[in-house]
Length: 260
Image (cartoon, rainbow, N blue to C red; front, top):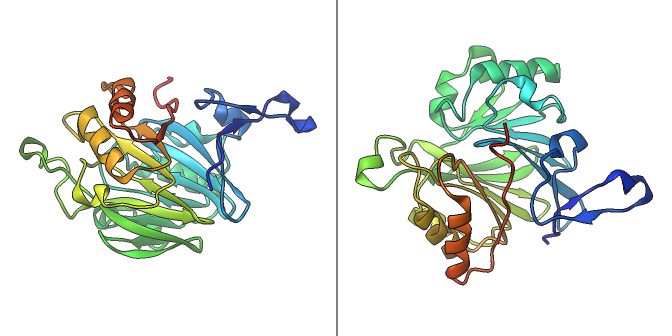
């Protein structure tokens, strides 16, 4: 079940809430983010941080996705209970940021990464890391998770994300299915997805794909909600227009990924 995002205003103590069409720029300070209700009646809140980094606060804890930019960028958010990393590029994987987040948490933080990141983690972090390769499935804090292939198909882009190395993920939270694409093009595996409630999809050249490719991929698997992310120097409004022209009923949410 999807519930439209709400931002809890200063009247929240009295039970008031205002429905938003887009995330609020100061969401990190109010800790509400974009709120989605699960089938179990709990909620998941989404907090974009920057570029490809964001935090999801779930009933099981706070999940940090591809955290980079220094631990201080996350100071207004709950400490990490779990860290999820798609691949080893510097805008997705930063050992210094990870070390700061672990220090803030005050205890080792469990992680899931692709094999390349697993090999590059400091030894003390490898002890709490679970490596997942394309096609693997498992659990994250007792929630089902699956590693989805993330790769380039266009010949001149193959060097960035070769097939078989990097991950996207599908995480299921109380029946809410969330797809984190990582760095990818509109692959057959993306297009074949089904029953996705919330998706995070990249587009920027030369590293991932064009707005046209992203709209094509999203229209094919038709999530209820899509967040464009990892789109620096690209046009998210163009993506939204192309998706609307395709006839897709997916709602596009423009998060504040590039506000600083």
